Image (cartoon, rainbow, N blue to C red; front, top):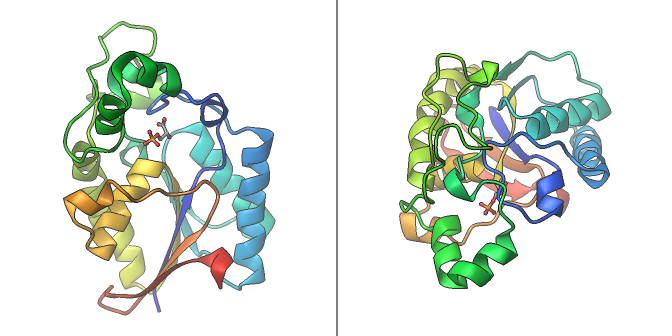
Length: 228
Ligand SMILES: O=C(O)[C@H](O)COP(=O)(O)O
């Protein structure tokens, strides 16, 4: 039976510092590394070893994937990195302190920027400190200046359908190590969550979420592996 394992990266340096991160490439903290290893140990303990893996082009997700695979004893499996699995681009909020931004603009406004379905944060000006347009990993890609969850879904889902679904249809156990909002896009799709309800779904760091699927990829069950 096909199985999809979703894993949000372990705690990042800017999760710890409470800063808007998005596409900015921060590393995992020591706690984040431990979370990633624990996720891998859990996969091994429960006999849920992935046969193929996907991740973003961001260090926190790549490192989480590698630490988890190493701990699970399957560092050798094929893996693909793609920017479409990146975190939602946080636009002009990138780098700002979440609490300070709430104090300045109000909790309501920050909640809209963080959790509304289709209202993106303000744009990040080209050439500003956190602009990644010239980063070689994005060569040939039209780097967004901001993204709503809706925009994120518009790049994550075609990638899922085109690159991940074929592995699931072939019966693989697929591990996707990614980010709060790129994974929210997948959960919304797989679990049929409405635009309104998805705003309330939080994805914790380092906790494998399991989707058991049938051959048609209908969802049979969804659960946190730590709860089984
Ligand atoms: O990009 C970020 O800052 C976090 O990874 C996710 O942030 P959020 O909880 O505000 O969506």
